Length: 337
Image 1: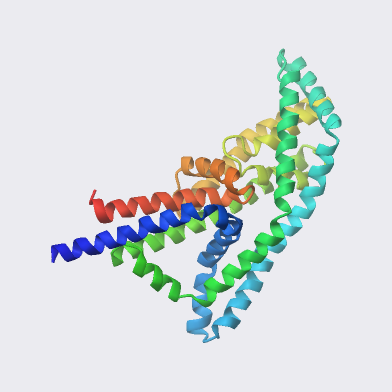
Image 2: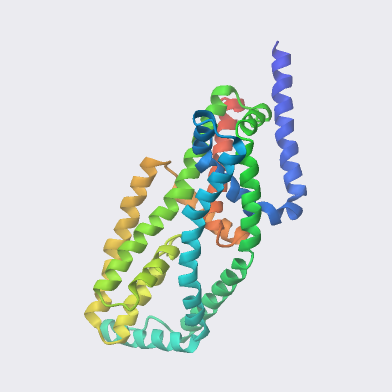
């Protein structure tokens, strides 16, 4: 009996190792499908309860239910993203295409700040480095956006396949993943919670910061406060510096105009209000979805940006979280620690 149990465990481990080897060997070939596939998995986890309800409760045919969900997801997620992108991208290009004007404004702001605090903040070397980094980031960002249509098409093909095979996929994974039924149930629940925390929590947190930032920019007289609020929300996705990449230059901009109190007020508003929004709402979303360690998010974003570009802001933390969850349950199942 013990030998039979050992053989089963060995076979399951062999399957996992074999799958990992296959993924490594075929990564270069499969990488062009990876963005669409990961996006489809996220959408499947989010919309699976609706699919189950339509098919099992409402008795819809799977094809009709899947098509309906595809249309709903498109209008809920991708139409707003397209609208925001159409507002942001042309203005980003305009700002960085006139690089000399942008650097002149920063230099004026630094002169005003130097008069207030007595020392220079932005040296010529820092300005040159900032311009180079910003230009490189925007170039990569715009280049990555050209692949969006291809990724979107692949995403919806994978998403439709996952939806129409709801139930079969879970059954198949239960057969090949070497976990006991209770561990498999726990794994699926925690995977769903982590997916919601990253795919919903991170964008909602960015929206909250963007709204509060827009309000502050409007109060303190920053031109086009809604646009700069959107930019603040987007950059809040980046670890460590985040939204400060927008509200610090906004404060320096007002200082460069000679509006010293407004410039200082914006910087204080960013530290006290926008920073507080990040901390408070992060706790709220962690309680609602899943408590993910900040280091997982930071490491995930850094790796994700390198591997996937902008979508890596979501994919990176998610993959790191999945990997840690898999290791944790594997350890409990087989190492008994």
